[in-house]
Length: 70
Image 1 (cartoon, rainbow, N blue to C red):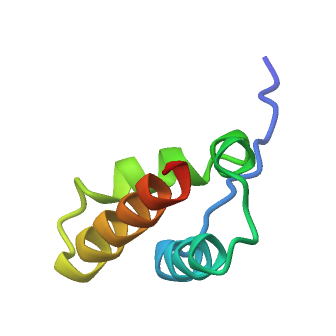
Image 2: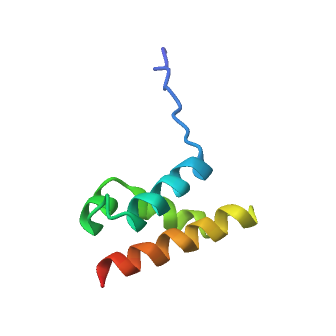
């Protein structure tokens, strides 16, 4: 049997979260676009990280998302 090789795609959570925080704070993203791009999901997942810095940025991103809804 032949197995299909799958390309594993990874991301740098530090970069993605900083990008998310900046983009939301500057109004570059509408809330629906932020969610559609998967950035809201990454923010939620990051608050369960074992890395304290990643957790803090996740909470910052979620806080900025909440502000963008108001």
